[in-house]
Length: 120
Image (cartoon, rainbow, N blue to C red; front, side, top):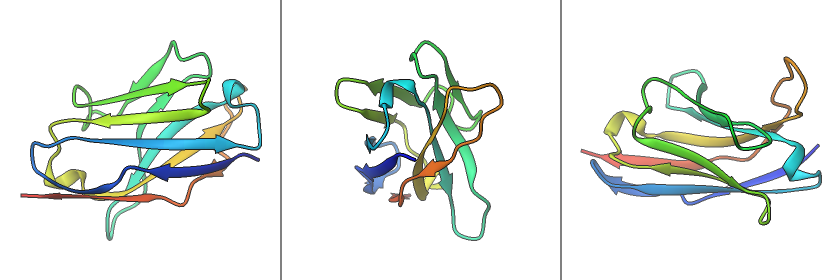
């Protein structure tokens, strides 16, 4: 498995921006597809965004499309989530996850999460 450590969360006003980082170790980062998920209080964890191992394919939840951007830097073994135009409903614990580049593979490594709070 790979070890993942998120950072960059915090408190921000609505309309503001944050950039989350997720540093990976323990496995060849460049071979991993990466994703961001979030879980708000009382709600199930939901997919936010994903990026392929090559970085040429990305995916976003409809709720964040056009506001969030996922990227990766294989030289730093890090994946980022740039979050702009934040809304109070974006408040959640954000988790980074990794999965092997295999068909129908599942996310099998998770970080500890970082809290994002958006005030109105």
